[in-house]
Amino acid sequence: MSSMPVAGIRAGHPGEAGRAADLVVRNAKVYTGDPSHPRASAVAIRDGLIIAVGDDADVIPQIGPRTRVVDALGRRAVPGLNDSHLHVVRGGLNYVLELRWDGVPTLRQALAMLRTQAERTPPGQWVRVVGGWSADQFAERRLPTVAELNAAAPDTPVFVLHLYQSALMNRAALRAAGFDRDTPDPVGGQIVRGHDGQPTGLLLAAPGALLLYSTLAKAPTLDEAEKAASTRHFLRELNRFGLTSAIDAAGGFQSFPENYGTVMQLAQNGELTLRIAYHLFPQTAGQELDDLARWVATVRPGDGDEWLRLNGAGENLTWAAADFENFTEPRPELGPYEAGFEQAVRLLMEHGWGFRLHASYDETIRRDLAVFERLAAEGLFPGGNRWLFDHAETVSSASLDRIAALGGAVSVQNRLSFQGEAFVRRYGAAAAAEAPPVRAMLERGLTVGAGTDATRVSSYNPWVALHWLVSGRAVGGRTLRPAANRLSREEALELYTLGGARLTGEQEVKGRLRVGCYADFAVLSADYLTVDEADIPHIESVLTVVGGRIVHSVQEHEGLAPELPAVVPLWSPVARFGGYQATPAPSLTGVRQAAQVAEAAAASDEQREWRQARGLLVPGPGGPALDDPCFL
Ligand SMILES: [Zn+2]
Image (spheres, rainbow, N blue to C red):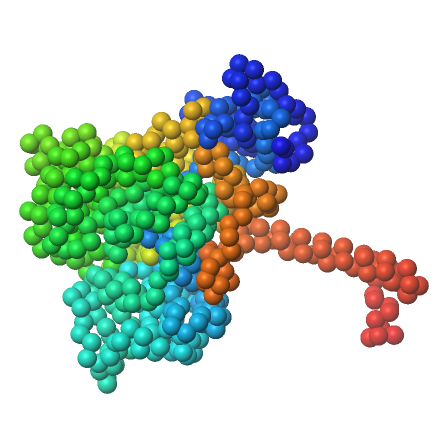
């Protein structure tokens, strides 16, 4: 079946191979990521794998009567994106419950969305805005006030999380959470109070976010069927931006195996539209070794298949070693954690488990490295296991050398796109310029994966992260990174594709478009390699293919991807607003205006014909409207 009329292409004779391609995408500007063959115009796919990359002549022999042929209309195609640090499992379980302010350009619009959503939310439920935005992105450059939340939602509980720094609650949410003058502040958190001792509605991570998360956990969750539907819609939302893979970072309130059941069931049903490599994260301080010991005895890294696979432990191994990155607060001074941490790493190494490790600051990284080096001296580390640091915003050159010597990798995220202003205020512009020092990592030959750390800090939109890597700019427009620490578009894309594949040991089958690799790619709304730099955050995919299946299709390809069941519950903010709120790309705004003028002109031509047909007075083009009562 041919989904688009394709001039000049007829079925060939897939002779020797025996079977024809399932899907051919042609007339694309394909960037393959394969240095030996970087450019192509057509890709042929069978059984989820690429069987030919080249031009029409290369794919014609693969086309049979049942091959779907898609004309990409000359658009740019790239290997599918891989977010190497995304809380995708947790994000999926909550997606349809959340009002996303991702991409919203003004606080005014954000509050209008909040007001509408409060009216649509049934009693007992909450309106939750849980990350993916920053005050820096709003034209007003400020947070909402509690008074504004109360005005927008007089009776519906509202919880608004701002990065890992703070949360705002309206009056109804304070009531629903049971916070009053007698509620004590938990360790590492502050419930801000007024003169009367009553909570004002502001919660602070001081510096830990447990208060923020545990308050959010008081809101009702979804039932099993809704969680599955929510996850499917979230994965489709990621496909919308050309994402085809993610490496999950687990996280707080993400317990194994309980909170992995939904995604495992979807994998079993063949209903995942994004490949997920996942990690296991001990949840309870003091019991980490029990959890890890249970896991190494019952599951193994590599368990699963190419859609859903266990990749190791992390991003926390022990809570005491976690340096929480609230850049509005001083760097947390961690107590002695090495003994328990060493036990955890030793256990993992002895059982052939790799890991990822959350570490924002060089002070933490140096202490972690000292533990790894002790184990390396015993011949235990890394023992052939893959391991990586996550975040590493302030990692030093000396630490990078030590990471390289131990065969480690790094996963970097654009957290400073959203927290850049706060980081600059505390540590200065020079530190922000190197946070993290991606160029220095690449110069040492380290494997580097790129990503976002969505959904509770950054947005999941990969093009915002790619823009940050390429331009050095934060969402508020401030240039944080000098040219020396920026990447070319091709380099940034490689971190977002092949870099991620390397972190899961899949570099031979993922991250490049070449024969034998997974057929994971995206056809883009604008040419990433040539479009104005300021337009990069506005790119989306018009056609996303994962394992040869079309999982997202819009514009000229609308209807090719199977439709998902409607969002449930019906009051879901996603049902009303969707996810990321796209705005027109800056360079397109002029084009759009021109198109509107042309549309208006066409309308007036029609009107002239309509009047002529009825014998009404018709002015010539450009002349005064003689039949206008004002002129008569
Ligand atoms: Zn982290």
